[in-house]
Length: 411
Length: 174
Image 1 (cartoon, rainbow over the protein chains, first blue to last red):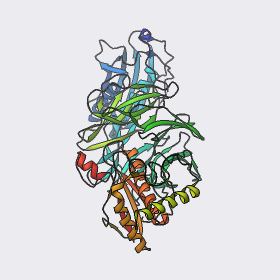
Image 2 (cartoon, each protein chain N blue to C red):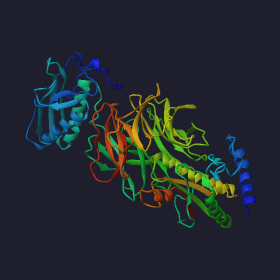
Image 3 (cartoon, each protein chain N blue to C red):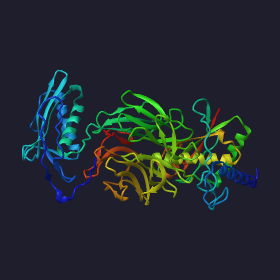
Image 4 (cartoon, rainbow over the protein chains, first blue to last red):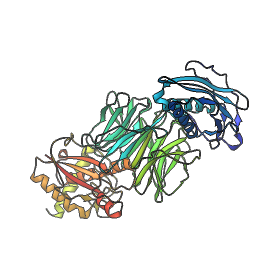
């Protein structure tokens, strides 16, 4: 999904909308883009006409929906007076179910963006709120919502580094591994239910694969030497990975079903690290340091001559986003900051630094707007959500500790 | 062993390694020591990558701390001149104990990116291994393992801790 900030003149172009779906079973409104605004500007939306009963699950649903809409970046939840969009309907607890009937309407022209009813376990009211929030975002803005997505990241103590997972609003955090081992840099597979990461479960750094649906874990790469940076291709058939089995860290592509390896780099003078696939799976961006400092390179998935795309400072941990832009961590002077690279023009834009902390290991949200990263200060990290359209950073991890290497799920 | 013998061995190793791997070499120092008196693997920053043999050391007994760590400069995998005596010591042990095998562990300080540091640590371990191969040790007896910045020898967020954490360690596998 493409996201580019729109020119100021295109402000508040209120396009006409499509026919509405009636209330009924889980039927989706087939609305297309209906409100377009510059990314920095909010659509005022009100939840006042959405009435909820007194049940705690209904209250949790309402709180979560309000929070998710605010976090989406596109909306400001307001009172009924200023609202451009009104969400109306009912939220009711019936035995162990929560029923939500919900309609989003433009206040100026009374046109309907979406109308839908939902039934879900009351015990899982937060997930239902995520889904409704994403449907509202999609129907009103035409952009994918991120409320139902998740983040995987690493939590560190002096003894161990383990994998954790949380909802995109930071709630529902749970510990995924309990190995008393070192977990390094998780990455999602394209289906959103698989993680790959590096760990030392057999004393050496190997690439593992975790199926989050079944809870099963298996080894993907355990060659002699280093196995790291394993990341599944968009079509799910291959893995880009850094191996040192041939005597130097180099970039390879491993076919997942056959195990067949293709070596893509041959750099006896340099290290490779941190591959990330282009959205079409044809190219890979990665880190290499033949000149001494780490820089980003782009290479065809079939090999050939790599193209160097950064020159100044040290540049590491690239993540090629669904919008085509490569987010990475750039150190110029003493500090790491997040930068965005357009691989076509090779233009680099540094996100404004809100403070003197280090911002590292960016990971794009599937909306192509938000970026999760590790904010490090005094050698301790917390996960933060950055907004490329200008909203202030939001802290995701609230517990004390050392949290880093976030990976945003693709859906 | 005299210095000249060591240099000869290293020189021989370079020739053998470059022939067996077919890597193209950078046209710089012929062998061993470059202009700043350091060896990376061999000649500066080019590790004549002799592929690793089948992995060992996943289970079984092992001994840590028998040899002092070899230290590295920031962002470097070059083996400095003053570290070589220690590696001679390691090579002597391996020659006297032909059944012993060794895992060379590469580590970095906490400065820099974690995943990049994994590769940097591996390169330090490989450079150390390449140096030992140059001293006549069979590469099949030497595995490498990088911990990047994940296992500091010294806790502390200061220059002195970082200096001690940029290192290669030697684990004897039984």
